[in-house]
Image (cartoon, rainbow, N blue to C red):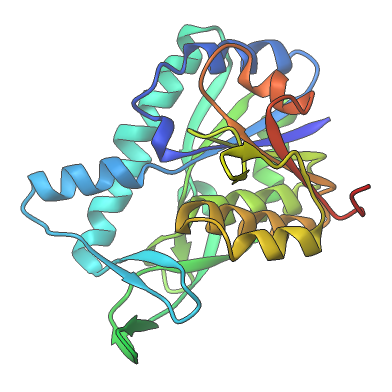
Length: 270
């Protein structure tokens, strides 16, 4: 079985040793690709460098970082360097044959830049220039297959290269969806700091596509983006997406066994 695991930036400061041990056990029988973000640490380091970060909201309600050229450099440095190597170190310590990469290495993730973005401010919709964000449009599956077949667990930082050679900030959840679809993964596990999609503080255990779309209107911006990415993965042919907590013992095994999590599927939910 091929499994794509997205590790959210909210988990980077947690003890990831249990997750790493889970990767070790599961990688004995399954091929695993890990994608990670790290937006929180990007913000912290950017502020230490004196680069104030700006966050904007799209007309459809998605919140994102406005990424100018300087921020793109910092973003790449932190995601491809600090965060990636921290994760790889934890995995190696637990005996995982991990190899750290960014989406830029080997042209793993090629994205289409959005030079202009629409931003909602009050009742107005404005156009902002100079943004270095992008949407993944191509995944180097040959490189991933080469690494997987050689027994490696690729650990990919969610930055991408644009068609003109520019480094781009890409959303980690959506990048994971693109990778999962491209390699024909059997499951996409989106590991975060909450146990799934919540309604009245209770976990919604299963969602169909139509129910997931309805749930998007009731959750916060972070979970909304995860559900949106999950729907993209389903459209790309991934059979199931699981949103689960990455904290505690056996988080991946629990997610695969559908314990204390939300499973989003293209099948009707009984």
